[in-house]
Length: 224
Image (cartoon, rainbow, N blue to C red):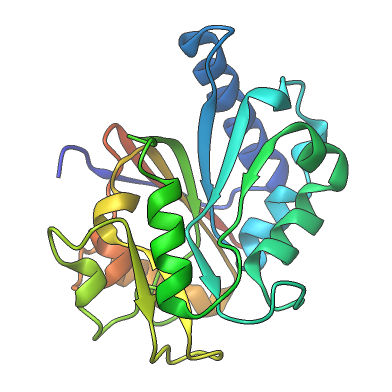
């Protein structure tokens, strides 16, 4: 890994939003007016709280491309879909201005293949915003399922035996997630304290294996 994990304790939503806005503005300035910025998003209670604040950003949303770290294999209009929850949190105004890349519909294999094709032109994600489950999973990369964690496992992986319902999912592989320049993990609540310690200590968990090319940070919300 090329960088160390940095931990920020007792953060507030406003602090993390400020951090994200500064990062995105710097990407836009660095890329130039004719280029776009790719942001990878995951679901989860804490990231969703942060997405609710995106409407306060003063940026050109037309240059932003949103991608999803994983998705549940349920009907496309199902409220369990990450796409539904994330779009609702971000808000329709931003969704209309930006470009949002969902997984589409179908079975896990079809959805994975379609998304892999969509990602062929994306060399990096400028920023990845991820959560960590109480078991140490991130996206839909769960402990005990090594296929999506292996080197050379492609971009997108179908999951048929998720320990959390629904069992069918699609997820970016560890290879693709680690093509992010900057990674931000967002966690909250006392229940996450134990897994937080394990990830910081580098225990053999999916979340412990995520590293951005430039920075990897954990932001913990103690009272949210």
